[in-house]
Length: 529
Image (cartoon, rainbow, N blue to C red; front, side, top):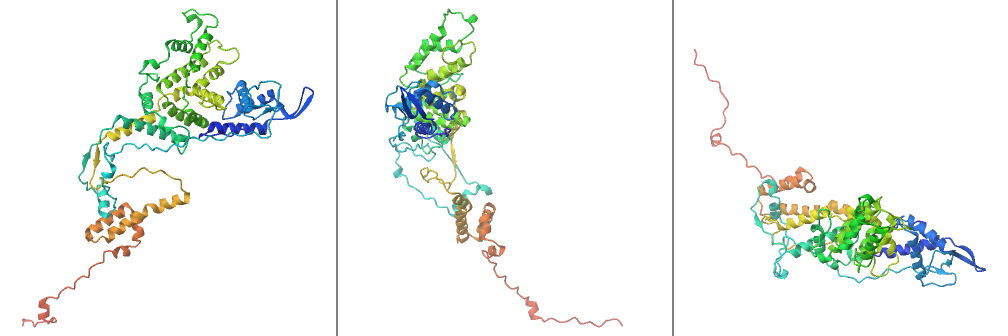
């Protein structure tokens, strides 16, 4: 049996737990065992459980081949604590599971974890500043609302540019954007882009939007060095000098012949232990407790590497600047140590890459509440970060460009034409809803034609227009919307009925013709003799 991919979304850690428990109960082989002159039916040894579950986790696309045997033992300890398994004596509730020959079995039923109920936050839609926004302190109730009336005159004004008749215009200067407005734009557009990538109906399923600090986003974008590392204004939040020196020592580890300072046997291990102790005693993981669910949700996108990198970029922008700086320096050090072939072994029992993941995974990602799979999820995330840290921890240029263009647009002078909805109060933004393909085809075919047909009828029945003006507007309408016009006037005869020809007056007879009747030509006699 294989793990199915658990995609992004709320409660992903709980869904992975339930998925793993179900696969373990359904696939773990059980048989008869003897222990202390007794036989036990349908049980398994601890070593057998470790072997089978370790193979399952390593082949799962939700966890990956980086899962170690020790991490598998830790997961089985939590299985024993949560009564997923019990020993053959029926005892459970303690985390005393060891990789040994001790016998265990499944209880009659292993309870799955329920999905936690989060506090329902009221959705607060962040409204971006618009041209029609009133100045601060103005009351919306005192502003008169002019209804939109699409009559023939309004339509003619809107389309007058197309026929070369440009009406007079005037410049409207945008009120100056405040610093708070710019910060809200950065926050709103960043969260909107993250929500789109994750494919969620609301980001409040994975994080509390109210706790996102827009100042952190702007600082992480603009206050960076040439290498892309965040620069701190408050030097007290920097890494201690001795920790930074130790990290530089291991990241730039030279050959023994080039090393000028005195060293002793095991010097590099002591330096590494100094760095590990500092990061291990942080009060909060670098990715923060608040963003735990957001980062775990992004782990469901690892099958699409480019999409996952973009999602991690946005999540890392939400970090406090001091956390982002410490994460950048740590990931650079870890990646260089793993690629340095001259680096002596830092641990006898693990490889360098495994040691990096095991040592720093919990100080990078950890849940404030106990989550049974947080070690495996953290190891999965740290592995992906090490391989892609240069892309993930840089500023997303596409997002930065779009936000800067948005801010520049709001600060730009706008040209307003008469009749172009100058005094119309814009309605609040509405949200999209999914429709059926049949309804979409109907709206595409008839949704825009019905108001155009009504507008055409208004032009036809407008008695204030002269025939010349009416012909001119109908000709313009026919050129712009030939399909709607053809449906209203299918034949030239139907169009001719709109402008009936006036009867021509009969030509009057000449007066001389009435006075003198017509006489035929008579041949005169010749005067020749």
